[in-house]
Image 1: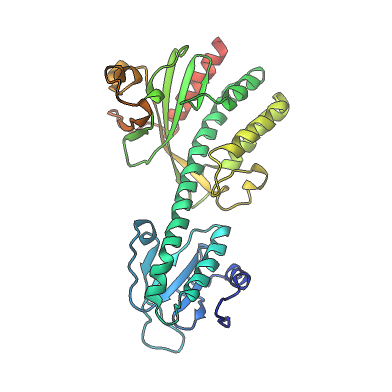
Image 2: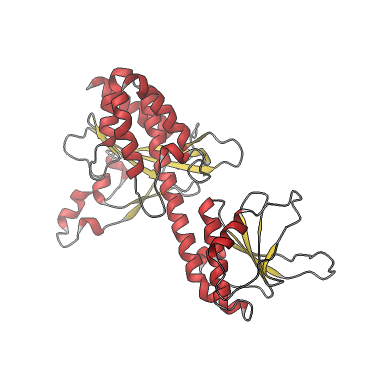
Length: 353
């Protein structure tokens, strides 16, 4: 199907067309719908991503974020012997990116892509970059939330029914510079790049023991997408926790649901458990690549702490950010050893409190 171009194409028609795109079952073939015949098209890959196709000379991106999603690919059109040079923009496999693809196509047409595709792309690229930047930020937030829920699930598994109300109440409490502070133990959770041994510290208070803390632990968790079954999904973890709470602490399901929905909520991210499992973004399969627990009380760690700044009164503590290098490396007998270590420490502190 090729739509009839207007001066201002109907956005709703474009959304309907892109949502209806189906991938060709043959991996080396694409069913392209041409918005501007032979110049601007859209298709869908077998992995479900929508693709915007720019025919002609290679397009270069000024944005590093966008360039990661651009690639050149010659295509052979039916009935023609010479390949058509194209640049393809692959969009994430998420429902709202179908709407974004429609918006970008409409914007390209509005910018006279039929006359000068390169110019139309350059004028539209800032919008494309913004969408990818928001997606990247949302993905980081998803992994940050999943790392914390994975820890909570481990703690719940190790706790008896009588302890669960105290666990959830402590988890949902808002304590500055801590993801969990209870029973004399402080915990800071960080997502991590599995290839890097360094961990970002955003404030010196994160690595400085607070009053009443006998233990302070930094948990670093590296999660990766699983293209197969994966170890878990975030909704699966939440269901596991809720199943325990329904029998042992039903009054604490609502506070935890509220905490989940409010976690770093933004225009690009909001976890709603009742719809998350069916959502390709929130319900994506993940696996734990590695996890490690660092004892922040260890004086040999060499971390810059709040008390170290007392000799520098002109330095604002909140302005100091750095990366903590883990000299012990990240290779562990089990990818989950860090999660298990921190969960066990919390469970023991709870039992002894």
